[in-house]
Amino acid sequence: MNVVVVFCHPSEESFVAHLRDRLVAPLLAGGHDVTLLDVGAGSETAAAHRLVLERADAVAFVYPTWWSGLPGALTEWVGAVWPEPFAGETPRRPAFPGIRRLAVVTTHGSSRLVNAVEGRAGRLLLTRALPGACHPRCRVSWHALYGLDRARPARRRRFADRVERLAGDLAFRRA
Amino acid sequence: MTSPVAGPDRPIALVVHAYPSPHPLGERLLDAAVSGLTPRYRTVVLDVASAGYRPAMTRKEWEAYLTEHPILDPVVASHAALVVQARALVFVYPSVWFGLPGVLKGWLDRTLVPGVAFTIGPDGRVRPGLRELRAIAGVTTYRQNAAVTRRAGDGGRRTLLRALRLDAPRRVRTRWVGLPAAGAAAGGVVDRFVGRVARELAGL
Image 1 (cartoon, rainbow over the protein chains, first blue to last red):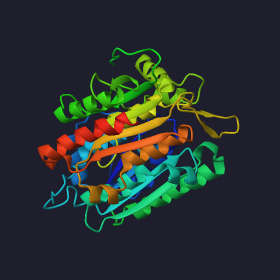
Image 2 (cartoon, rainbow over the protein chains, first blue to last red; image 1 turned 90 degrees about the horizontal axis):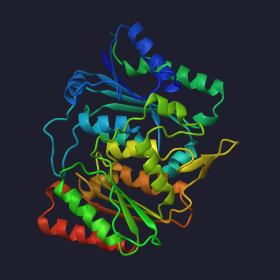
Image 3 (cartoon, rainbow over the protein chains, first blue to last red; image 1 turned 90 degrees about the vertical axis):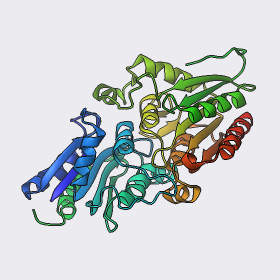
Image 4 (cartoon, helix red, strand yellow; image 1 turned 60 degrees about the vertical axis):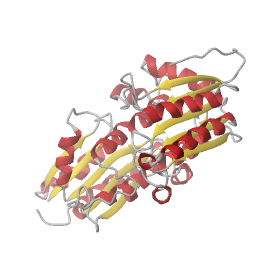
């Protein structure tokens, strides 16, 4: 299976980079084709990334939630790579009809309650808006660690374990 | 950045403009916003979509985020100095997927850091930091119609009027002026919208 992991974080030392590694390792071990898009670091064009998504069966986003949404670099990437329909425009087919599985892995510095008050703009974008550009029966899942700023190491470990187990669920067909 | 002729006693309205240039409608909306604000405020415009503003936080900036000096870039420092003085924050931008364009989201990430928008106490709790702020407003154009935008959650409005608002004093006023289906809007509809922008911001 073609799995695309869209990663965005400025530091390789971050917990979010660790989560990406925990997700990617079991996918590779399972024999899947994994394409890692490191958003904000590379100089690849939007067109090249669109080609990657056209071949994808599953996509996972891995990023930190800042100001209730995606980091600026990832927000820009979504705008450049995912075609947004105009009002009244009914595309003959979605932009990425091959994508049947979409998963989001993210960390929030603040609590779940604060995030609810803030409005969860990132969650709305990735779990409600973008699936419209995927396969009509695309399955979407949300995996978030809230309160990262005050999380004890044990909670971080449990979350990272959960992300590792997600790999099996993300690659829904054998390699 | 423009500083119009104004008395020094008037409060500052900081207008963050994120339409790419050239963009005729974006320019009209900016002009309408500034003309509405100017009688009451000293208006300062930051044009973040041009002049090569970088939305991505760098590794060094991320590492500095929780230190005493989270801002490393002099351009960001000049923006932050305006934010802490601003009585009104006004965002003028084209919605992308119902939310902020990347450049504007990156501006929030890099400018509204600890010590500017909020402080983190020794107990780890976040406290509001925008003490001068009394009003937040958004002016935007959407690709989709009003019903689709509402169903999608209107993410940009949530980010600015809910998430950002948490760092302002309780009595902060908010205004939202949005034009749905902007690409298909007839000239008359656009003209009326531009007029509404000026009126709404005159009352901010």
